[in-house]
Image (cartoon, rainbow, N blue to C red; front, side):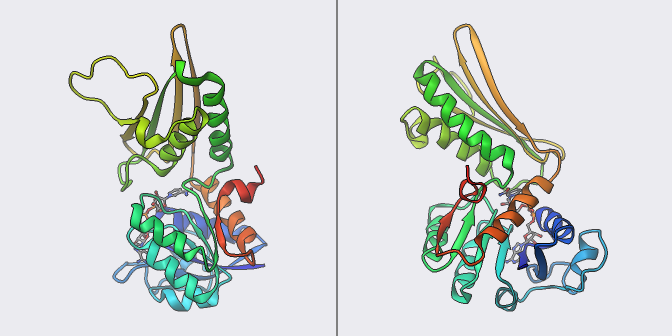
Length: 266
Ligand code: NAD
């Protein structure tokens, strides 16, 4: 039985995690954390997530929550995740991070924490998307530079970062597959007199519309044919189930930064 603390408990993913944890026998919710001022503070985490009471009240005491748990699961915001990682590192617990949109300095802070504790950090915790990462790398390697690659992602109107962490990881896999770096190959959207498409370019496009949970398509195209690899999330349970599986897996591991690839044995 792995004791988990959920940071960002009243958020979209936090609530999905609370609901999924209640259905599993191998994890137990022991703390639920929100930021000061959040209306969920003091309420039962189950009630906040729309299920029966869990006996765990939402609190803003992150240190006490980390101390009570075996593993902290963080789905919050890019500016606070590094602070949470440092806090969990000082308490010696395991951590699962789903937050995306971290800049270079914030990313370094997570890497620093992973020198002390085991952390699973993945932009997308679903099995389907992690398989897609592998398929995109393989397809790019096989098709090579004669195929144009475009990545199109769609998310709900409240998503805070763009392009999605998943789209960026898909871009990295596509670039790696044919020996490029994403940084040098990528172009974000297009506007104006763009001229001919440069060979080897990877196009990245972020749609923000309605309540879409997360759609990703990688398009490979050349003269005469197009191949599209697509994934669509229909609710957040796929991410929550993956994060809980990662929490069970990471408890008691040696320090280091792990990916869902490690958790799923892909
Ligand atoms: P959200 O805005 O609904 O939830 C984030 C929650 O974090 C909010 O309730 C907010 O109050 C809380 N929060 C902010 N600062 C905090 C702090 N200091 N302490 C505790 N709680 C704090 O967002 P969401 O849709 O749940 O997504 C959260 C993050 O997870 C985003 O970065 C998103 O891109 C990412 N995400 C990752 C995956 C994945 O599979 N890895 C899937 C979905 C979303």
